[in-house]
Length: 421
Image (cartoon, rainbow, N blue to C red; front, side, top):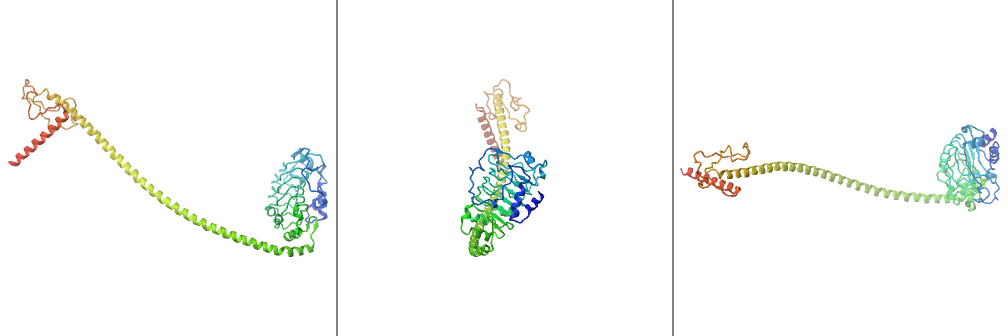
């Protein structure tokens, strides 16, 4: 077994590949034996179908850790280096999902061919994997292998793959053997993506639609300079000489067209950049204007708030003054009413002194503030002896107005007399 492993890792191809594939299946039990190398299969075999005997589902099996332990006879799955899960016996249950391989961290060879797997998944932990066999499944897309930098052999024959992803040549740098036989690849452009694979020496694309195109081999020989074997046949020196003659001018023309497209793309991007810069400048100018307007509005708002506070304070003061004026008016009307009442019972009323006439200085309200007449007799009624100092009406407001008018006339007369003297 160790000798087989040594031959498997060897970079050489040819007879060693067959010996390598045989050595892988030797320690494992049927029906999990490895199938022969895809490049050694007879090419006259008809194209596979999902309804053939290999893909006829009798039942679904699941990959479990217990199954892996029984097949490899290893209790610690971290020591497993080779795992064969290929189902070659007709009528047996097949695997549909790739799962429960996380603990097989040192696995180098994995074979899950002849199953009904639809998706390549859950292989993220297998960083040391060197060979992956997924032939005779129903896989539609190459995926889930981006982390396998150590992968050297990838067998995806007899599937439903139509495209080669761009990342394959960038991520699988160590790939030496790629088998895409019996798939649905129909474009030469798909295969030109494999050009960065400098270590790729063996490629199998037989029984794909692309294999029927003229100059198919010369195209691959021209683009994949490291190839040694194509579809199981060694590449001759004559093919290596014819390939540049056939595709070099076309390659130059293609590169020139690509260059023109790139130049046009650069011009378009530059125009978009200029337009974007202009738009950005306009937006910055608009932002500056909006900021200035915002500052002005804030300043105006502050002034309005200050004016509002001032007017509010003035309004409070006016309210206090108005309240006082109303209170004084009320007191004056009340005092006048009491004076009118008192005047009906006293014949000679006198006006109060100036010190006593101040509103708000009376110790109490309810009695007229004037001096009583000590000379007048008690028998004389006030309504029978009107004097020049007393004017009685039914309206207290009119009384106040008439008294004020009379006082003003007396003062003017007194002033005139003094001026004459």
